[in-house]
Image: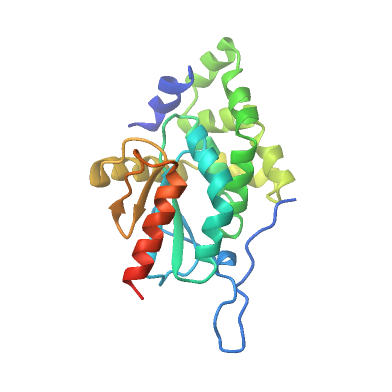
Length: 237
């Protein structure tokens, strides 16, 4: 989908940062949840050599993704901390609003991606409401802007520069990230690749070691994901 059409089609619709790993006397990492890195499709928390790799295709505007983060972040951390499980988040757009939100979360790179992502989830109802409250006449003006300026205008209306500043990322840096067309194109490509390669159709979608997790019959997404994590860990002992 062309960036110029994304918002036109959809507008109707002190946080801690990751530190360097804590080494122990044996050269091991004491807490892998403190290690994060960029990947070609998103950001990964934990040991890149973990035998069990959990991937989430998520949308920052998705209430179900927010609920998963709120309920699963703490128990998932117990698996990631040991270095036996890694967790990668890959953005999947369900709305043009996802682009400025994703650009904001990823603006400062892996150093603060996961804390910023969780802060955005926590405040999701507020900033989504601000986007949806943009007056029709202002939307008409935004539609005529080049894509990078569209994302900047929507992100500014959502309060993202100030939000970033409140969470350790300068407002000017967030504003620059919102105007980064290459970064926006990467978000579009990750979504397209997820759809075309893995047949991802909605969010959240999970994969463990490359296989899609079907949680449709489970009591909750995390309950099913955790059961499959345990099963996968048992197989790689």
